[in-house]
Amino acid sequence: MTDLLIDLRSDTVTRPTPKMRQAMFDAEVGDDVYGEDPTVNRLEARAAEVCGKEAALFVPTGTMGNTIAIKCLTQHGQEVICDARGHLLNYELSMTAWFAGCLIRSIPTADGILTWEMIEREIRPLGPHAANTGCIELENTHNMAGGTVYPQEVLDEICLRAHERGIGVHIDGARIFNASAATGTPVSRICRHADTVMFCLSKALGAPAGSMLAGPKDVIDRARLYRKRLGGGMRQSGILAAAGLLALEESPALLPQDHANAQFLAAGLAAILGISVEPSPPATNIVIFDTTATGRPAKEISQALKAQQVLMNPISPTVMRAVTHYDVSRSQCQTALETLAAVLS
Image (cartoon, rainbow, N blue to C red; front, top):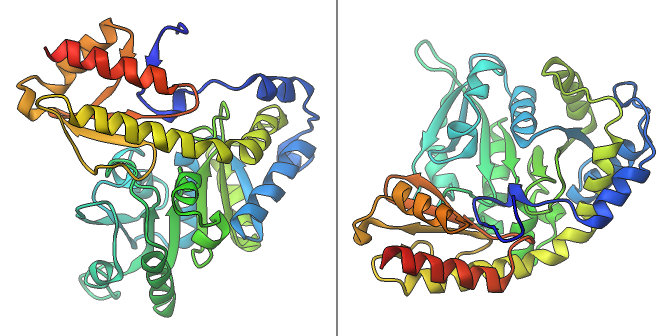
């Protein structure tokens, strides 16, 4: 990677800040599998506090965090309800089936936002022919729907109605701090009624690696054992946790700028002949745009942009995604727009 490259593929490509690198260098460490890494312990305590939960667990990836949460909230042979474009279903190598032994019951949505009315129709009691519903999973913000954010009242209703039926709720909050920045709602309020929540330190918050899973203490105690089973006992992981602590404390304040850059990018894309943006304006830092009317396949456009040092991923034959983050400036967004216009001309 060079500094001339404009990388809009994802907010996972952010590089640790100089302060993060120094914190990693200076990190006090111990053996986390023994519970003796003080930096990890501080990170877990702080993450639990931010989420308003009793406890939290540092895990290597968001996929591991989601996998463990579903395992903790379900029994083998149940169903898990989620959106049809959800990360849990499409981008986690069927870990819900492989590790938790559950089937996903997916529900198509227009904007990635499930409602209780949609969910209630799909809830199944245990019977001679059907597996019962064990858990509901909600993605906030929703990646492939374009960074959409759950209205708080919708999220609350799902949690409360699910609990009335004895069904757990997990929030895949990989970018929940983006949801918080967009709505002005604290993370602890967003996930107040959910059983568990996972968020990524390594996406919009910019840490080099790691995610957090938060929930009740008894659930997180079991989650720690599942982390070990999945190979997630990382020993002196305070080196990573030190960067995560900085990301957790300092990066949320930067997210509104990412959102403003995404809106700038979306407006510029919509002005290019043949490009349509949906949703517009984007709610957070993800811009989804359709290239059908250009007559050029998304993969071909992506390759042409790459040759000009601009990276954007195709997510279908006719749709592309651009994700803003702190390593892409407003001027670089402008350059990306000019490069795309030139490619398409």
